[in-house]
Length: 196
Image (cartoon, rainbow, N blue to C red; front, side, top):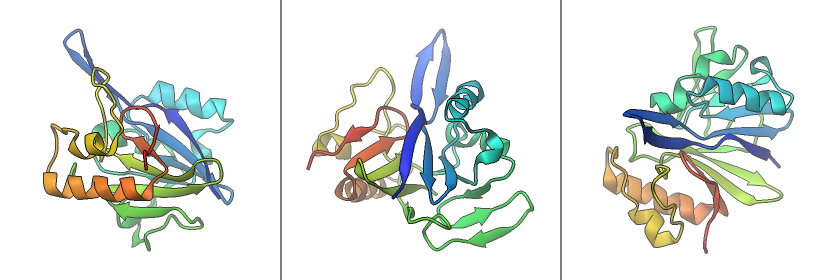
């Protein structure tokens, strides 16, 4: 079973005429592997959080990108020994690209398509002892700091995404992850328990 920790709780706010934004960054440990999901763009906060876990950038085996928006992916290159995974491929700093079979190699962590917010988007299904099934959802679900984070099923499905690329796909992705999850880690906002 996997263990996980939210290293950076994603945020999105406007202040003094500027947007401040970075995605939720999650550390997963399974079978001796260290995995980062969505490294975001707040370098200082991410490095501090890794250090608190006794890890450095060289200790990370895989980085998973739920999608390619800069607020989720800007720091991908700081993990010098990691391979990078998206919804279908594994990329290395040796300039290789190969397909994956829907799992992070060496783990039971599933990578599933979850389109709608972006043209290419995936979520992770992580089986844990303490929390059951945790879905790391990227921006299938996310909130600005000024928004109330309503987590009943109807509110989750109907939550407005101003950057949606395909609303019908996004609704289907939300329904899928809500059905799978005991807990959801959104792209920006607090982890929450799914009301069944």
